[in-house]
Amino acid sequence: MSPAQPKTDDPSFDVARQEAFAERLVGAINDGALLLMISVGHRTGLFDTMAGMGPETSATVAERAGLDERYVREWLGAMTTGRVVEFDAAGDSYHLPAEHAAHLTRAAVPANMAATSQWFAVLGGVEDKIVECFRKGGGVPYSAFGRFHEVMAEESEQTTVVPMLDTLLPVVDGLTDKLTAGIDVLDAGCGRGRALMEMAAAFPKSRFTGYDVSEEALAWAREETARRGLGNLTFALKDVSTSLDDTDAFDLVCTFDSVHDQAAPAAMLAGIARALRPDGTFFMQDIAGHVCPHDNLDHPLGTFIYTISCMHCMTVSLAQEGAGLGAMWGEELAQQMLGEAGFSDVTVRHLPHDEINAYYVARR
Image 1 (cartoon, rainbow, N blue to C red):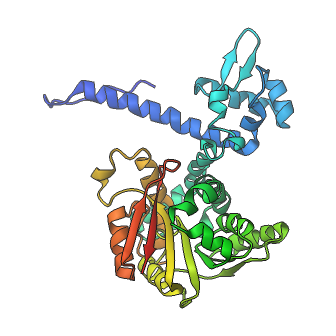
Image 2 (cartoon, rainbow, N blue to C red):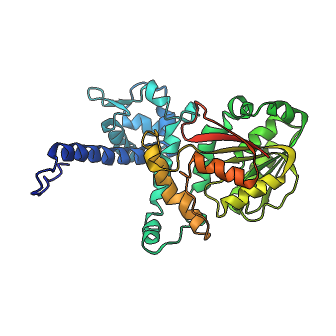
Image 3 (cartoon, rainbow, N blue to C red):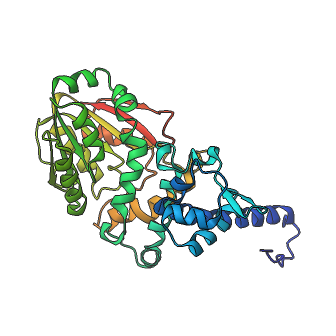
């Protein structure tokens, strides 16, 4: 692609700056296409198949993956030009370097970036609806997002489930000991409940409850919980932003990236404060960032987070005539809202494994 030269009589127009920006856009177009193909490679298991293999032809790769060779060959073309896969012209063979596989396979969790690439196809599926919202306002409901809970569960596996026992729970002093002895725990906005399952299996003396507004997600969670024989874990259909009516019921309430996309996040936080026992703890994982976009210029995933906010987090809240807080609500506003909800003791931690989230420990 060779962008046309601009037509301008403005002597201050910086042609070098224009050309550099055009090059950046060309790179972005290629990278955007590459992410779609990486998503396909993840969903079809191609990266998992190629990991550890020596150089092989497209026919061999397709056979081992159980896929159609013609499609695999075209996908390998994208992977080759995207510098993901190496191609040997002499042997007409393809190879996935181990250093690349370390970020592209299911075995690489929690470093599997291929799972995250799925968001671009999910968000692209609602683009027409989002454009209409730009023109008329309103929002796009959860039900419009195909595969949302499936992809969210995979994302949760990386940032929440795998590091839960060794990294996340130790953030709260003494929490592991309390869970071992037996306490009551709520995950407000639990989705498919993967985080709860990890805790319920590790701490059989504690009692775990998950609330979510999606019956689809809860049906999956109940089936998986039964399959794993987790008798200390239950789920209930509940809108945690409007009907969290428990009082002094839990020793620990957790939220994992669920506060910012609620219709009424302030009401949810107030409900969590009421639901906690006097010596209870609220453990909140939510997006790391700041209120002002300028302060997010150096955020390693700033553009991604604003995009997923515009095309999911903010719009699902607005679809419920909610606050539309957005994912980049900012740590400053988060701490302010926690204080207004009744939490007088709030600390914030950033963990090396997770560039997307901040971790809040709040007590009344």
